[in-house]
Length: 358
Image 1: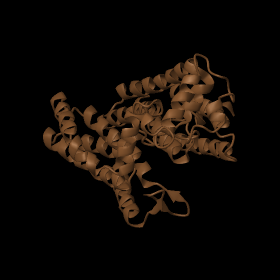
Image 2 (image 1 turned 90 degrees about the vertical axis):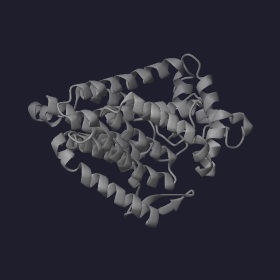
Image 3 (image 1 turned 45 degrees about the vertical axis):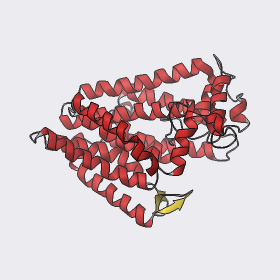
C-alpha cells in the first residue's frame, strides 16, 4: 500500500505542492472569516479546492508532448467559444461573458491557459521562420481573443490573457528595442484608447487616481479596503477579529478583495509570510522553467509562472489602490471555482514539465 500510495503522487512536485497547500490552507482560514455571513460559501470553497487539486493531479500526469499536440485545437476551440459568447452568451450585470451548458461556463477563462499553450507551440514549430514575421503572427494570435474578451467587456481577464501571451513572446526572444517601441506606442495610444473604454472602465481608473472624489460611491470599495489593511497594524487584530471584514464594510471580501480581510486579521507579519509563500511558488516555477528540456516546455512554464506573478501583483495592487480594480482574484486564496481550476491547470502543467526533465 505505501508503494502504491507513493506512485499515486509521484507526478506532483513536492516544493510546488507544499507552497500551493500552504496557500490553500491560508485561503481556507481567511474564507472562513470573510464568508461568515455568506451561508454555504465556505463549503463550496472546500469543494472547489478539491476539484482544483484533482485537476492539477490529472494535468500533471499528461506529458508535455501531448499538451503540444493539442495546443492548436484547444486555442481554436477557445476562439469559437468566445465567438459563441458574443452571439449567444448570457448577460449578467451588463456583461456578456457566460455560456449556459447545463451550468454557467466562462470561455474566456480557458484562454488564460490556451493562449500560452498556443504561442509556445507556435514558436516551437516556427523556430526556423524569419523572426520579425514570427512575432507579427504571434501578436495577431494574441490580439484576436483579447479583443473578443474586451468586447464582453471583461478587462481583468483580457489583461491576464494579454499578459500570458506577452510573456511567451518576450521569452521567445523579443528584442529590447521592440519592447521599447511597444511601450512608446502604448503611451502614445492612451489619448486614442481612453474614449473607447467603457464608462465603468474609465471610472475605475479615475477612482484609483482619486478615491476621495466619491468616497461613498465608486471609491467606497478601495477606501474601505485601505482602512482594513491599515488597521491590521504590525501583527493584526487576530483571526475572526477584523472589524472591516466581520462587519461587512469591505465589498467583495470573499473574492477580489479578500486580501484586505487577511491583512486586517494578520497584519504586516501575515502579509510578509503570504508574500514569502508566493515568492517560493514563483521561484520554483522559474527553476522548472530554467530546467525545461524543450523550447515549448520552457516558454510554457515561464509564461505560467509569470501569470501567477501577475495574479498576485494585480490583485494586491488593486486592493492597495495602486492599480485600477479589474476583477483579478488572489491566487489560491480567493473564492471562485473557475479561477481555482485555471490555477490548478497551470500548476499541473508546471509539474508535468518538471517530470519531463526528471
